[in-house]
Image (tube, rainbow over all chains, first blue to last red; front, top):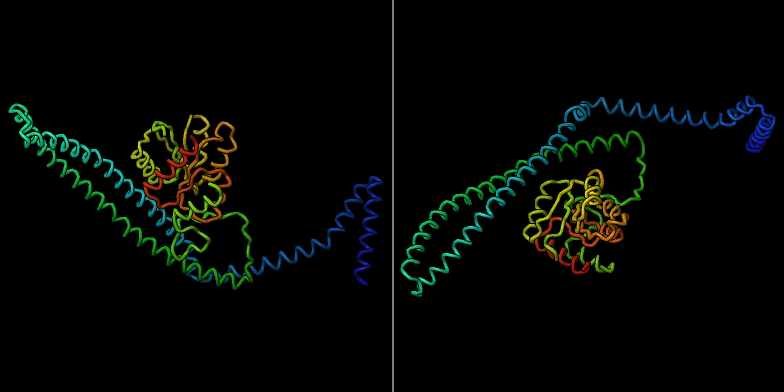
Length: 240
Length: 127
């Protein structure tokens, strides 16, 4: 019954609104429009008020926990810094390694070229196809080459040591990342408690394909390919 | 395959750009330029006569897939061969890249051999 009378009342209001608009009575039209939306606004304000109170209580309860304050003020910013540091360290190590390799390649190449050249003429000498003058030249060049080989070996040794030392980043970054993992786990526990306090969490449906990044064993759960072969098979099934 | 062709390598990590550049140099390609994301790469592609684009997927600013779509949408660049080299390995992503018109897809970590094979394959088909 109440529903019917409510509907009738709104119908009457609507007619009055049309009438006032047709009559050009702006003031009356505004008044009726406001009246029509009044009921809905009241419900909305009550609901927002209730949610605000609940959220406030949840946050107050949450902040009372000293550990949370510690997380927010120190540990989370620290963790971000630590992870940035991991990026810097890995970047430096990669550059150091790449530089050592780039420096070593021409050194190794020179040794190879010179050794090949001398090897050819040494072969001729062994087959007695080299005259005395050529042998004198060869002999002095072999002497030079031995000096060069000595110096180049030292250079290569040094560069290889640099590569070796640069790998130290793995240990250091591993330790840093482990600390961040344990922090994330602590925060996760607290968040689960916050969700429990503030009611049910609503699942948000993701329509877009989210970027997954490098496959992390034990973490990556979506339908990923395991190798380049899988990629190739998938692409060829698509006509590539 | 023209060893003097102009190649643009796009990756937000400078180390990966360096590794790809070194591998390309080993394969005989020396005319290589770099960009750190799609936003930087697109104007370079539009301004310069690049013959080949090698791009990462996940980058800040403009991602590799958006760069690929922008390239295909630009009449002057539409025919440019594009190779994605990325850690993204979800099946639906590979399908998405294929639908966007990628020419090749290499998952990280990769080997020099894989890169060479994909590049040869792309240029066999293009020529």
